[in-house]
Image 1 (tube, rainbow, N blue to C red):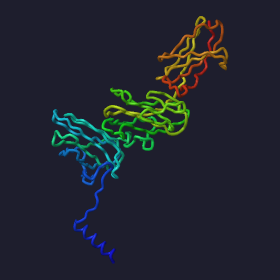
Image 2: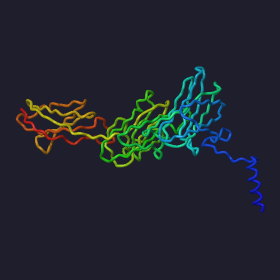
Image 3: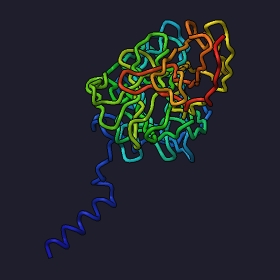
Image 4: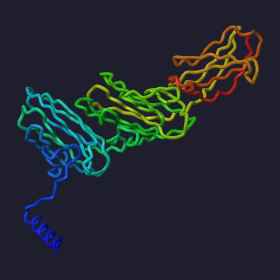
Length: 364
């Protein structure tokens, strides 16, 4: 009877507004700040105004009907102002997946976040109040080949397909935004196949970025990946032969710098054997071949068709011919050529094509 009476009193109290349900707060937001429950749905490409109260958090709700890039634009009109903002993105369940600290200093500021389809909450917070308010807006661009936050660790890496370039947005490293210092992508490669790892993130003007393609067991202690003999680790621009069939991780780390856009991907390389011709000279032979882009060449010659005891000549700088000197007059030679990856990596074998068809020449 006492339990029923207590339940009735609780029900009446809630209905009368005497007692209210405890509000839900997002990860990292305290009860003294504004609850994400106060967020209202924001339309894209529409101006909104936030009236600042120092250190108070202001919440916005955005819904994406497909994967793409969310643009968060804050406008500053007063060149004398020195505003310092925190902008963060949370999932519908209140998990923070992206954060950036920015200093507008009188200029409009854009922030880009790659997100999957779904509902998200965006918090705005000002630490210095030199302006009473700021105008801001959200925009969205569909993109099926962009990074998806959060993707700072192997277990939440953005999936990549071979021969596809992906768009990423590296956050800044200021204000302890550790979750946005790293970007990680996962791609499946086949053992024995040649690939080229490509990223323009390492060409960033301030040169504060580490870009590597890592093996599944390679660790990323601190911000440098491990580089032991047993680890797989190549740099941007490297052509390599995959040592195993399975998952590899493209790793980008901005250890000191500002936000910027980059592209990243792994391309399959089909090494082609060149077409070869040989002409005889006096105690020499000129070997020519068809050009294969982005590679160097290896020329092999011998006095027998099995190339036993063969000698070789490496040709660089995209040359397509070489003259082999000091050969024996009236002697028949067998010649073949193969292309080789121009970029090498100390931890991997060189990437070669098959040999060309064998050509013969009798030296004058």
